[in-house]
Amino acid sequence: MADFPFIKVQREDFDLTTEVAKLRAGHKNIGAVVSFVGTVRDINEGDEVSVLELEHYPGMTEKALEKIRLEAHDRWALESSMIIHRIGKMLPSDQIVLVAVSSRHRENAFHAAHFIMDYLKTNAPFWKKETLPDGEVRWVDSRVSDKEAEQRWTK
Amino acid sequence: MVNILYFASFREMLGQANEQLPAKHTTVSELLAELASRGDHWKVALEDNVNLQIAVNQDIASRETAIKAGDEVAFFPPVTGG
Image 1 (cartoon, one colour):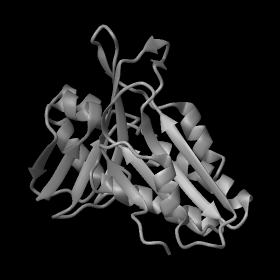
Image 2: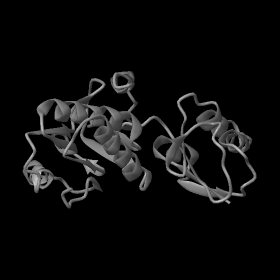
Image 3: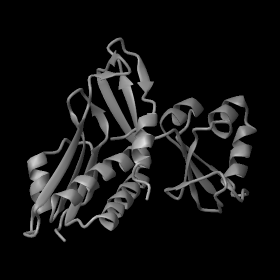
Image 4: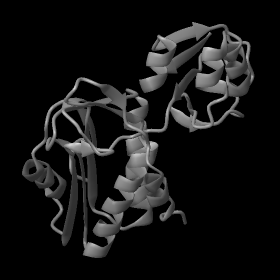
């Protein structure tokens, strides 16, 4: 296994190229790398969003993300995987989350990245709060579609 | 003692992020009943809330989960990360 942190919860932005290089380092048997980057939309529920703030549950967040990551390794033959999730204040078009996985063949990497994101959405303790241009601040509601997305992976 | 944590909208509604209570409850349900006895505000936010999410010692739990002295019990709304 490569020597890098598989789970990171951080305020700072991340660089996709740098992170994927770490994911691939020392794995010459890798034939596929799939990465997903989630970004801040400027519209939610029909309203313009000025600022998005991410709160989390320190300790449980890391534990929950690692559990999801290991579950992906149990289900598919992966070479390496990583999850980076940002917290704190972000602006529209900022990067929020990175999920990257590698495998020998593409099928496993595609499935695993999709699975990790779907599970993260409904199982990792993060909460979004958005500020609208008029100064209104509101907590973002969870989506039924996210729960449905998670359930498609039920064994 | 039991360490209780409130996150996101719950922290704001209840006006606190954490508190400690004597460990006299055997399940999360019993703890919720004690918190509900503080008033409607608490009862509506937690015990009566069908969307209430619970974690005990940082693992997803339910109202039936057993609790004991030294445990960390967290209450929060459905998560919205990613």
